[in-house]
Structures are given as C-alpha cells and as structure tokens.
Length: 218
Length: 205
Image (cartoon, rainbow over all chains, first blue to last red; front, side):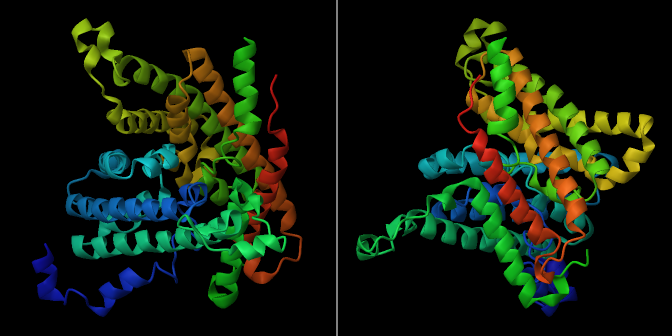
C-alpha cells in the first residue's frame, strides 16, 4: 500500500506532514474538536498514568485507522459502526493485556479507563471522518497525529495536577523541602475530579486567546 | 430493598457519572445547548443503561468470569474468559442502541432529527460502557443491585446534562470573555457543579 502512494507523492509530502502536525495544536482533538474528554480528565492525576494512557490511545488509534482504511471498501455502510467497534475492542483488549503484563501497577490505577478507550470518541471520530475515506498511509499519519495531540493535552493537565497536587513530577519530589518549612502546602484540591475540568477550561482559554479563529460566537 | 435504594441514591449523587468519573463527557458537552434536546438524549441514555447493565451482568456472571461456565459442564470451571468482556459488553450496547434508534425514529421523529448524529453515538457514550465496567469491577451481588446501579447512573447522567443545559441557556445572556465562550466556560461550570456535588459525599441511607 505504501508503495502505491509513494508513486503518486513522496512519503512525507507537505500534505502528509500537515495531516500529522495539524492535530497537535491547530485542530487538537481535545480542545478544538471536543472529543475524548472522559479519559483525558479521569486519569490525569499522575504524569505516569497520563503518559501510559497517551501511548495506549495513540497505538490503538494509529493501528485502528490503518485497519479501517484497508477495509474501507469492503465495510457495508449500514453496519460500519459495529465493525469499527469490533476493531477497536480487539485492539483495546490487546493493549489491556500488554499493560497488565508489563506495567501492572499503572494498569490497576487506570482500572476501567483502559476499557473505556473503546468508547473514546476520538477513535470513532477519526474512523468516521478520515479512515473511511482515505488511503492507509495518510490514515496512519492522521491517527498518530491525533493520538499525540490528545497525549500532549493529557501530559499538560497531568503535569500541573501532579505538581500542584502532590508536589511531585513522575513520582519525584520537585517542590523543595524548604518551601514546606515556609508554610507551602500541596493543594489537595487539584487531585479531585472538578479541578481537572477547570484546568481544561483554562487551557482552552489560553489556546483561544492565542488563536482568535477558534473563538465561538455564541 | 434498602440495599437497592442505597445503591440507587449513591450512583445518582455520589458516584455521579459526569461529576465523579467524567464519563459521557463528549455528548454531555455537544448536546447540552438546549434543555429539550438534552432531556431527550438523557432519557435515551437511561433507557439504554437500564437494559444493558443487567444484560451485561448476566453475561459476566454466566459466561465470562472465572469459573462461570461450570453451570454448563463442571469440567469447564477452570475457563476464564474475562478478557472477552470488553468486546461482549460493547456488542450488547451497540445492538441496544440500534434498537433505541429504531424506536425513537418510529415514535418521535422530531426528537430523532434533533438528536441527529448523537443517537448512534450513544453506542460510544462512555457512560454506558463505563456503567457495565464499573458493575463488573464492583462485583454487585445480584441482578437487582446491578439494575439499581444502571438506573441510578443513567438518572445521574440525565440530571447532569439537563442541569448544564439549563445553565447554558441562561449564560448566553452573560458577557463572558471572548476566548472562554462556549466550550471553555462550560468546562469551568461543570467543574463548579462537580464541587457542589461533592457535598453529597459520605451520605448513606
């Protein structure tokens, strides 16, 4: 398949590069397309969990996009949602087994949210919007790009929540002991669910004040 | 009976799908522009959940969990199919959603056209799969408890989406900083509502 697209255009043509880079900031799946919020908020208490989740989602979306794109001409459109769900579910089961085997602690903390990758709207959204209508190679790039765009937001949220909530990054103490002697306290509020929503709200605020095109009329 | 009621209340207020676990956020944010549509979607979610959670409970109990197959043949007690639970649960949900879609299309075409693309997307509403997965993880004792949990979670989601829709209808009249309009302010309001819902923590009946 890649050789076929190679003849028509180079493997990393400007168009393909754009497919990859656009979701990172310009058309970010979380802050612009508003997809895949659920897991983004629930597992961002610690940076480690967020990174594991980002890698899992990127793997599922990239491979899934590739598979759906290869099958796109054979899937009857009436039952496409079920076909897509089966592909995603099979990939997620594999990811779940791999996580259980290699990073058991993180897998325990993520609990049901690994299974909920199946219903992560980013994946279905990309299948519907992109993979069903495009060649495998662009689909793969699009999948990786969207997965990373999702991952970046996850890592940003987790960074602030872990830093302010526990005073640690990746489990290592960052805030020096002397701060605590002066009366600095970890903000336990950051660990609670509502602060995740407010953090995302603030990220969207910052992104939109930099990029005026995204402002909604309302 | 008291136990069922306890699970029911707990899943509405304390373990609220939206405010405590962020499940079903996509449709929660996208369809909450008017109260009418959001109530329609909320009721559809309640309806799907009250069926899928007990069905998934039976599937989990009699087919998937370790040793569950022993009712067919005692020699199969060692079989553990729990890795298949994701795919089984999502299949049940997807077929249920198809059914709800047909019913709504038949009896309420107006609601059908206003829900638009979001009706098939109930299939990927995390609240519904999340309900089944939490049911599996928390190991409810019998099908009654699972049903109470499914109903309660669905109603909790319905309350959340109707509440945010009512607030968003009013907020269009407010002067919000331009970059925060729409999505941004909705996130922050949801966070504040989550803080309010935390006041229910620790309630037992």
